[in-house]
Each structure stands twice: as C-alpha cells, then as structure tokens.
Length: 330
Image (cartoon, rainbow, N blue to C red; front, side, top):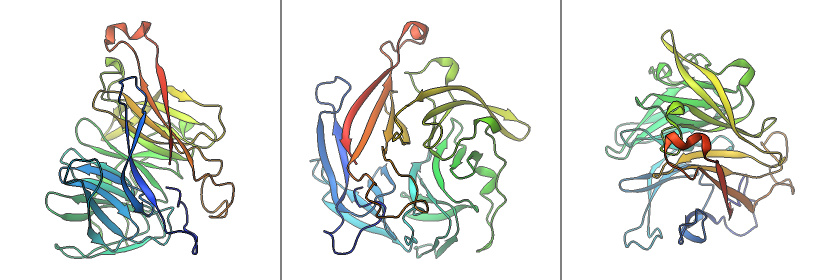
C-alpha cells in the first residue's frame, strides 16, 4: 500500500496491490511475485472466501474473482457501500473469517458508517465490528464498542471470537459484547484478560496456535504483536476464569532490535507454519506525525515464516526454530 496513509492530489492515481508470493523450489522462501490485483486504494483488509476475495476499498466492500485461473483478478464487483473512510487510520480492516466463513471486519473510532443492504440499513459509529456472510449476502453490526483501534480478531477452537484493542492495549472476549444495542449506544466493554505487566501498546495481529509446527503443550495459546516499546510477538496461555477468561504469559516468541520492526499480522498456513508481516516503518500513527511526513516508508516490508525442521512434537526440544525471511514490497 504505497498510498498509505493518504493519497496526495495531483500525484498519479493510487495503485495499491494484492500480491501473491510463490515458493517455486520449495526452499521456504518466496522467489516469485504475482500481481493478483492492482489499481486499488488502501486495501486495509481482505479475506479469501468460497466465491472470491473480499477487499476493503474506501467506503466500499468489493469482491475480486479470478475466473480463468491465471492468478489475476478479472472481475471486480462492489458488494456493499456506505462504510465511512474519512480517516484511513480507522477504516474497516483486519478481516478475519469465522468457522462458518463469515468475515469479521474491525472499524475504529470517529467513523460513522451507513450501509444499505438487501436486509435493511446497517448503521454504526465510533468503533466496533461488522460481520458479513458471503453465503447469505448478509451484514450485521456484530459488536458495538467504544474502542479506538480494533487491530486483530481471532477465533479459538470452539469458535469464540477474541479481539485486540491497540490503544488500551488489551485482549478481550468479544461474545459478551455482541448484545444488540440502539444506534448511538455502546455495549459495555468486556473485561481485559491480559496480565497487567504484559500490556504493551500498540498491539496488532492476533492468532491462536493450532499447528503441527508447534508442540502439543502450547496448542490453543494466543499470539499477539507489539510495535512500540516491545518489538516482537508475545505468547500467552488462555485459561478459564469464572465465567470468562484470563491469560498467563508463556514466552516472548520473538523480539527484534531493529527500531523499525513493526509486526502487524499473524497467519498460520495450511502446513502449520506461521507467517508474520513486518510493516517496517520508522513512523507509526497519524496524530503524532504528518500524513505526508517524508520519513514515512512507502516501499519496504518483510514477510517472515516461522517453523522448525522436525515436525514431530517429541523432537521439539532438540529442534531449532528458523526464521526464513522473504524480501518484498508493501
């Protein structure tokens, strides 16, 4: 997204992209880049579904389809319109599919969305989550919460949704906040579940461990990134606590001494390896710096793959974790 955070009038039209990185020789490193879609504008969230790729595009939710199998989108369709996009820092983002295939989309504060749908209008303001079901073409305001920046959603093995609130910063169980409330009203924020001495802001990216690349004893642990102060990924146990949950810090999965390291997204691949996106930028945030500050890096980014040579849990202690870096452009 070289356009991020703000397109400057008079410059060439935005040309943000969705890219496919392919490992053609199976060495664990991407060596081929394919432009799946271009001429996009701030695709802050996307998710793969049974009928295409759903992408945030300003005040639209669009669907991209590759109908001839050449790894390039040849159909582009506006599915829904009316999402507020006046502040690119808070637009619908961090898409995450639930176990049914419905897509959760986080929206930050200050925005006021009014979306027309076949099931009636959906209105929202000042933070929360949408849930869109491609199977039913149905959108709902699944949680209305007064939160500045919801930058991560993930589901545990029981399909329970959890989310990160970056400015607090904390991890919350979303289900208690899914009570329907009147427009302009908010559901009380669910209790914070991170240990107080492990709260580092801001947080970005959330995943539950369910992977053959990780040992049995850490399955169902939760992973989250921190991009200021502590630069890295923290790993926590998630434990039952009364009628909710609490966490216990297990370890810092990775850390970096690179001051520009900004881990943002976490995704497990079908083979069980963990992918981590590094935004790699000297500046973070909008209000602290001009949107057009020349120090903003619009070119560089990294993708890391975390795995270990032996896939047997019994051999975990004698195996070594590998970080395999693939150089890319954002």
